[in-house]
Length: 133
Length: 480
Image: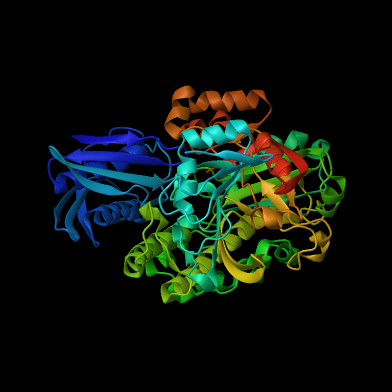
């Protein structure tokens, strides 16, 4: 359970695994932060509100990650985890954020729908997301 | 994924390689590049694009093809607007109208040799770069609306750049049909501070010198001479384009389901060009494209100002005229004859450059006799090329050619091979100054992470997509 970076010729992806959907979304946010930092994300120093809505769990995860990227671009605070209540079409709660970090990884432009998936596995859930670099 | 050779540097992916292919795939590549495309799944994406409703002739891929998201990078697909043809925001990409601009000059190595370090430092200081950085122009909402509508002309109206820049740009620096009301508030918010900023990743600015002329006639028309100093810059529509694509992907994901269209990859979300959603997307896309043109126009102004300050001469005196400004992520409605009938086609170019051949009516008089300039950046530290469109390019792939070297290695692999500091010292040993915001970026963008650009442009020429005009060698690289 956790996240891992997926190789891609030009861009970069993550695979997250978790026993339940809220933890899965948090692991995906951690994975996004790990790509941006090129390092294991640190513990958050504060929490900020987060909310997203979409038609299905995979699109909802993409929306949550877009919100995390927007938070980073607009405030400079990088989300490193998420505490969310998740229904099939909405997610609401908080991002844990950091404001003191070294950006060792690439700039992420956007969250793509390429191979986007939130799937059940034998012991929980798996998410796959690619980012445009 | 099966392929068969159908001509010099041409390979076909037959219908049937993926369920639902409506046309074959057609890949322009040499033997090594086709194998590489097979390994990195780009061919699978060529076949996936061939499933788009209304696609005509083939799902094309240029010689710099590699694995992208949805479309392969280097992908070209044209759909018949009046026969249910679709448009796919993913087939344009997040960096709408990302492109390249080349300035030429009368300067020679003798004029700049001692000034290159200072130029590198000053350009690094004056050209806004990196993530989310504020640009040369900070716009309020109504000003940004002007940029989205008028493109480079709006910036010219503020006294930045030259009148001649417009006629030497694709679409004269303004894509028609922009609808600033189709752009979301968040896109406005992201774009307002960013006009005139380079961005990060593979975006760059290079001081270069022409070291080889391959086509004297075209080079003369483009005002390029061996030994002359040029400046190339690669940037796009920044947060505006990223947000427009993000917003529209969701719209088209829903539209596709409603329209009963099925595609093999959700990033290929698409809808009929005739749908109201598509009209709105085209309006928003054109607005983002105009931001990109304005962005590169403002950046070029700052380059001229910096050269003038460092060299103590005016940009006019140094002849720092634009050669051309090309886009390589865009969809356009263009007219072609297909199966004996003139049709309006929605031509998606994702990591591919439009390359009009000689005589095309849309070309400015200066270029009409020779064809459209195509600017092809190589990887950091290697040569770049100026190409020109060919007459046969029209039938080959809807007047399209490559857009760069094309990545060959993932960012993680590239970083494992060598650290950024080592990449910098290797380049400096070759006489290329590097000014980058952080070393990790240099490692990701190292020359060995890309294909050999000369092999890519040789394939373009061999396949008849475009012809080589001039080769440019880097002197200084400014990275985001």
